[in-house]
Image (cartoon, rainbow, N blue to C red):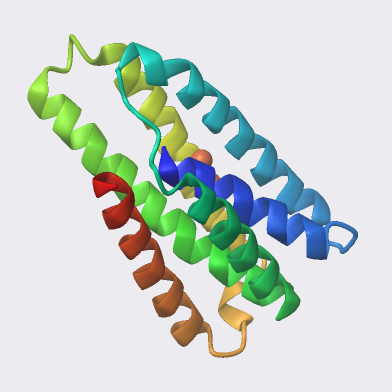
Length: 161
Ligand SMILES: [Fe+2]
Ligand SMILES: [Fe+2]
């Protein structure tokens, strides 16, 4: 959930900078899917008695700054950001799916179906970033590693606060 919120803001930031560029439509398509994900979770929150993270205002700003900031470095850097972020989100979904399977695959079927669909979407976003020259970003390894560590930190915090 905080991942979805962050992803939405990252794509908003990328669109603010690259919306008119030749990757604008690619980013828009991913952003639209994130909005669907977010909407679904907002529907599900009350049902599973989950509470939104206290840090939502922080993710709001941090996500946008990350998206716009990497986009300002160029479209390859924006795509490198997408690859890193989507990889963390995909892994996070996979671990949630494993937990729900271990708990009870029948009882959790509704939620599992949703999470699997979203996991596939995120994997697709990751692959889209690679297909659009993420690896050609200057200092790709450094950018990718830094963003990944940042995202792990954000997920860790979001699960606690
Ligand atoms: Fe998503
Ligand atoms: Fe995504």
